[in-house]
Length: 596
Image (cartoon, rainbow, N blue to C red; front, side, top):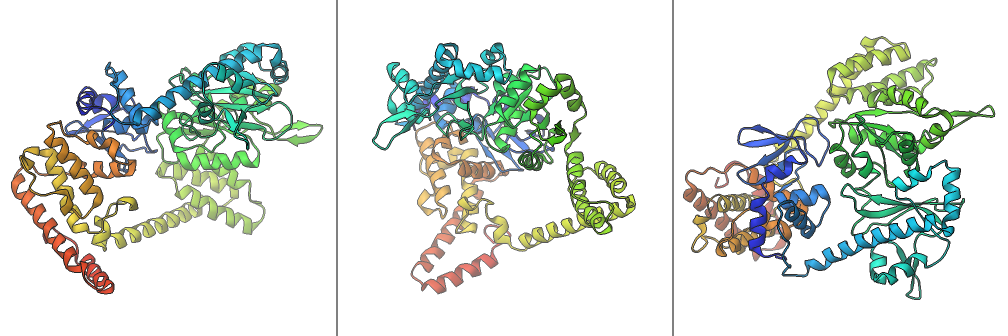
């Protein structure tokens, strides 16, 4: 391990998983476990389980699971080393020197964060200097006040090849660090030059106050108009939201989700300090997880052009059946010289004022109502064939709603819109839902009739070659964590007898922990396993294992493993076709008890 095992043992002991998870998820006790809404996917019914006894979490909905270090890695988007540092700070523990090379990546991350901070200061000072006049003129043209620019830490990059790189090298940063931060680009001759030139600079600050990257806007009509930091060790556009560091403090009951950074700036300046924007990407699950910490209501306020409407539809699909109350604020077109012109938030605030925006905000539609209006706009209700097509499409949309009261309300609205009876729309919705249910049941039935498939892990990356042996191997791992004394002084079976390489690796690592007299727990595996592997192990560990008759259970599991190992040896020398036929035969016969 990169850290001393004794340190990790103490860290995990001081970081009770219930206490840590409770900082992010409201948990309710049900039996021996606690449950809440999963922070890793959108849901309305809590399927996220935390086990105080086993010190693990597992979501029965999305399959995420692990120990307390895994939770912080997932929730905070941190590496193993940085998650340990996060928990150590929380537990008021000093971080020891690492034993391996993991400190190099962590050191680079800290250097890049420091470099981003110093770059933001450099851009800010440039904006205040004579060299920043062009950007100041641009801000004045956009009606962005100086105090607003200061609040957002705005800066200026000059029209020069190496203004920033030269300044940062003088501060002691290396060319490699500038490249790693995405602030510099390497030329063909091996030199580097500034990535951002002649632009308004917008530092992207996370919820902890760190500058993780930058957004920028060109001052003229050249392309690209907007340019962001590329993916780096500190910046992942899927995980960040512009201005979330400010919006998290809002007293308003919701958060407004915009398309552009400057839309956010305009709204904050107008008093809407609850606005954020995704960084040049469609709304992601990771961003919704971040939003769920601070609000239960999202107002989508994208541009009213085709791209904005498509982005709204994608966001609504992502947020469907989530715990969020979702509303859509549609911006009207503006009339210019008798022509209807599309406008964004920035335009609307400038031309109509914040009171008009408040009126739109208070009347914004919920997601279902918005989707209904978008569908209705596609059809001519005076044409019977189009009216029929509308009824079919709107019925599919209403059928996707889980709430029966919502379905009834929107059936009535759809009927009014097209002049068809509510009964006819309702019957079509019922037929659609019945068809969907029938198809879903058919899929489940096919799976249920294939016992080998049912016993396989859902994720292909951890699938088993020998399901019967692997299920016994899972049982041995559960017993090891339940009663390690069964495996002392010498283990009754060694990892090389296992059929699953993953389970053999996990079993071997836990045996080593037992031999070295360290406390056993899933956190001991965190650094050695991938995210999907840890999810799978957490799923194994949350399954029940009887504490009675442990010795007999252990012997039963071992018998199955050895029996299957003998079969593998038997087929090892076979003709490949004959071996494949033998394996297929066993798959068909698999089912029932492990030793059946």
